[in-house]
Length: 299
Image (cartoon, rainbow, N blue to C red; front, side):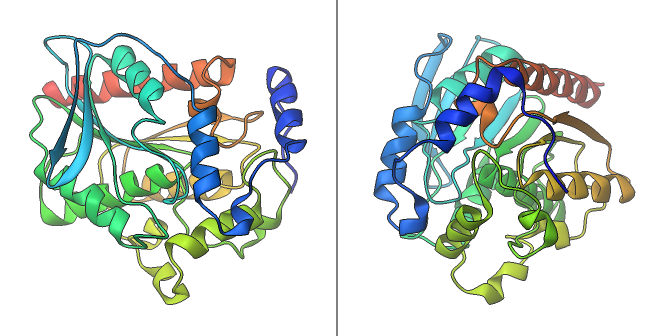
């Protein structure tokens, strides 16, 4: 299997990534990668009515309020291999998401590995979801590792009977917990190769016996009676296959699923490269999904 042709507007970005000589997660050193992500993350973004740092369930969060009468709430879990990334790094994306949807965005500062390995991130994610007090529809959204946390907490909320989740938005999510399958060796992507994925897994879940735990591999979990899902995948991303398999498995379990694929995009395109057409199309898909699911929740 080979990757589709890369989007013309992203060719230069891919070339720059391929020619980069910056720090690598393969060294096992996370501090330089955290600093690099903070440097690369887009800055600025739409103005909000309020931006407040507080905590929910003992976990630090940043709450973005785009308008006085918010339409609902989105809990945002950032990506970064459960090892890098922060609320500050996702400030631009959170602001854009709040403006796009008219929803409050609760961005979660969950604990990172390797200082806090699995299941610390899941515990923090659930602490927020389990304690959230939301007016109107409630959505879970995450990209990559954050997509994993959104999928996992959606399953936990179903099993515990609360809170009601009106939709889950999974952006190129890690859901299979397997770095040895054929899809992980299918091609070499511009960003996030198989060896890098394996390095993040080693930092987050060092005990391989834990990698079959559905809190790391939600694809192995029970998928019936989960909230409607939007699954966004990128054709130049090694996670595309498991994202597609998760979408198919959800649909087979009777869960309403919308799929949005960007064949010529690569991992992290939505948050790191918001000016691209692939990002614009994906944001529109997210906005449409939340508007439709939120409308259904209010009827």
